[in-house]
Image 1 (cartoon, rainbow, N blue to C red):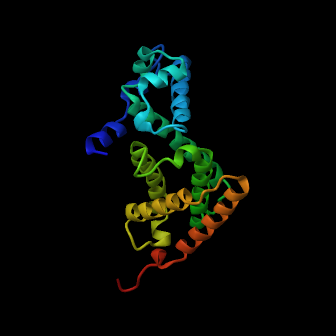
Image 2: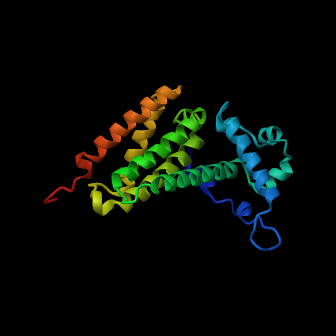
Length: 222
């Protein structure tokens, strides 16, 4: 993917965010319903073909929506994809906050485990799509998917930086953790609930080993 394509994919769709009604900053329910329909359609199409091969025409036909309506809300399919990832990010944030309510002592290990469980739950719910995200196909998905996971992990690393004292910068450490988790899940091949439970259990063991390794121990005299 070129830098131009990356920028195009990650640009905020300001036209979508500015949709209002009555001049009061409240989005019309019809607008929200249309956008939800388009995002659901794209998500469904991603289970059967790479993003590169999906067209706006195909999205509109599957969503029973006109191209004119599509372009009222999105400049292109990349803007729609970004909006879909924004929803996924919000879903993960909500799930993480819900789990953190029981972490009353703000324990860093528990927080990492909660974030891992959120990643795993989302991956398993979208595994038909997630398994297609790699360097060989769906490269347009790889970039935002990777950054969306890294951004969430980096926030956690920074929050507990002074308590866990990692020996590496937050973004580098987050990238290492995320790519490790994704690689582990990608090659796990879990298809049944029992296999998913096994993958989850082993992922927690791996995370525990990581948190107890020298990566998170301050080197004296360094």
